[in-house]
Every structure is written in structure tokens, then in C-alpha cells.
Image (cartoon, rainbow, N blue to C red; front, side, top):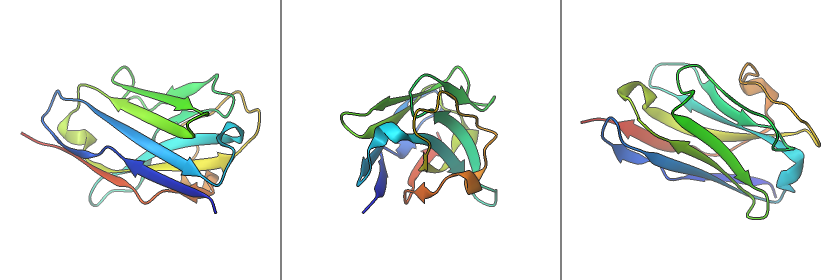
Length: 129
């Protein structure tokens, strides 16, 4: 069955880096738009970044643009989120999510949690000195 499994979270000092991975199984990743979301304690889950199924378009929320990079390796069925220059406010549980959207050239972080059909279990990222 379809599974999304996040990994790569951990404790990092401000200014540090982490690379999150979203390993998928049970799907042909090429046909899915993938989004990364995060949820800080006491806050709603928010979209951070997305990459279209065609891999042409990526988008980021303003607070992470220039620091985070999303990428995909369809052969490895894995999507990555490289996070640099981490800040305290980046702390939260990070989730990847998949939406079946074959040949889609575009994605947008304006799409909320309801737009994605499949979710991973999340990985904790803590930015603290």
C-alpha cells in the first residue's frame, strides 16, 4: 500500500542544516505532487514547500525561501527538503504529503492540508542552542 516515511529530523543549533527525506512506496512517484508541511506546538499545520509532479515547479513559503530547497528523485522514490540557516521558528514536526496529479507543471504552497490525500507520520525538527 502507499506509504510516506519521513526521516532526517533532529536537534540542530541555529544556523545549522538538516536534510529531510520522504521515502515513498506503493506509488509511482512521477504522478504525484509532493508537499512539505510543518506543525509547531500549539499551531496549525502549514505548508512549507511543494514540488510539482513534473518536477518543473517548486514553491516556498516566504519564511523559508532562500534557505530551504525541495527536490525529488523519482528513481529512488524519494523527495528531499534541504534546510539551511535554520532558525528557532523552524522548530516543529515536518510532514510530507502526496497528491495524485499526473503531469502537473505547477504547485502552490497556498494549497492547504485538505488538498493532499496521503501523509507521512512526521519527523521532529528542533532548532535550539
